[in-house]
Amino acid sequence: MDVFPNPDYLVRNNPPGQRPFRLARGFFITFEGGEGAGKSTQIERLARKMRAKKYDVLLTREPGGSPGAEAVRHVLLSGAAEPFGPKMEALLFAAARSDHVEQVIRPAVERGSIVLCDRFLDSSRVYQGVTGGIDPAFMAALEQVAINGMMPDMTLIFDIDPAEGLRRATLRRGSDADPDRFEKETLAIHQARRAAFLAIAAAEPERCIVVDASADPNTVEDVVTAAVFAALEARAPARNRQAAPV
Ligand code: TYD
Image 1 (tube, protein in one colour):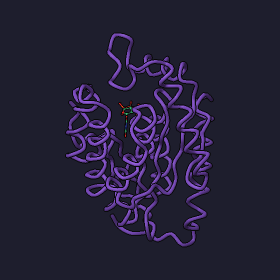
Image 2 (cartoon, protein in one colour):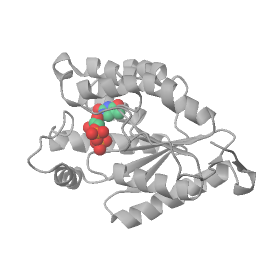
Image 3 (cartoon, helix red, strand yellow):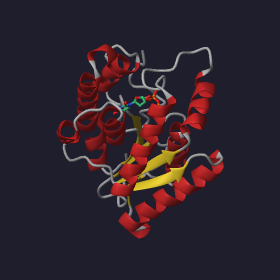
Image 4 (cartoon, helix red, strand yellow):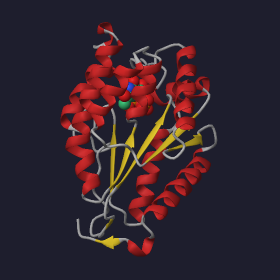
């Protein structure tokens, strides 16, 4: 079981001695996509780059990111909740999300941090809503309760052919280790998830940017960096940034 706080996923410290910039209101960016799309590598690279530019960055993930949500993470990813059906799983993801939002994300955004979150509400829409076959009205109600207004300012959707994504995910985990509850599903299900993420991006172009995750990691990093810094500059031009002690 993962231990909280997990230093890889909830890291709020900028380098020692650095006075990070804080924005008047923070910025909330989510990373979404199928398995093996390279989100975790890219989110860490972006956090490093932003901290080097003195932004105050909080890196977190779902399911998890707060003590309550990390406890639920294990139940979900081990498959312990699977026998009780997708609705039960959707409720557990929502419970974890609500705790994460109220304990970690909202306070960080309110104090002016940039929050980078590895998966968020779009994963529930896709994995539980679309491929779990749950009634859209039920999912929408659950989403509202879970996020309580905390909509991401920007969502990067990492798009990759699921066959390639699963190949990468297997390499990363090691072929001896078992895939988790969701990774183990059929290629057809992963293909449906890819289509569902792209449909969200098409429906919400003001929030979502699709990133071609099949490119090499440095190219993907350049695309992510350009998109995020352009959005930040549009939101808070550099001259208006205020230096504030942590
Ligand atoms: P994780 O081990 O964090 O890896 P990755 O994000 O690299 O795939 O796995 C999280 C799994 O949980 C992933 O298979 C997607 C699934 N998931 C949902 O089904 N619904 C959700 O709301 C979230 C946040 C994740």
